[in-house]
Image (cartoon, rainbow, N blue to C red; front, side):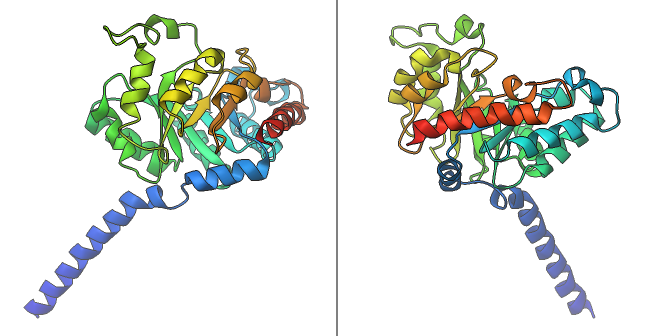
Length: 301
């Protein structure tokens, strides 16, 4: 009897260890998009468009304002309308976190609604000491099952490693951003290197991962820097915000930023999702996304 109990105890302990291992690695292995799959989808769609879901509850179409489930209904309608024109969705987590517990549930349901054919980005810009980043990684890679998360590199390698530990997920590091304040630090010369801070960030961070699990945010309004960026990281994918409402040029981005695998995910948020505030909002979003996709198809040929 004692022997049986010992055997059962060992079995349970081993089973628990296996279950924890499965739990810890399930989201990192299953339903994660590889580089090969992403490139294949770009070629199939003829598009490298990423639709940004920066869903501001105060900017919803008038007929949805104040209705139960309005934000989720809006997100689903936008996804349905743009699915054929894009290859990725970028969920700006701040707009959902601002809604409290309900917002997190909406964000979870939005991630779940996006089909696995499309790349799912959590635009959270996280980055903290190792054990805190580890929890951020678990939240977005496991709980929400995002394919990728945006992170800030200011605190250094130990703040990025927990994200890169998920070998089958993607870490998207802020490189050269599209906002006006980017000039405050990112272009500052570093010592006698003759290089700007953003260049050193790209050089250093690119050594921590590889082109299969690491991307960089590069703003479309910084198109003049794309040639230099490609000298530093020729193979990596770039997530490019700033086209559309911020005035970035898709043509300039494609001309200077594309590599042999395309290497670009160009994000459009407000220009797509707020194309109309009327009952035709989804139809108008489809039209704008389709126009972007048609232009992108020309660059991919």
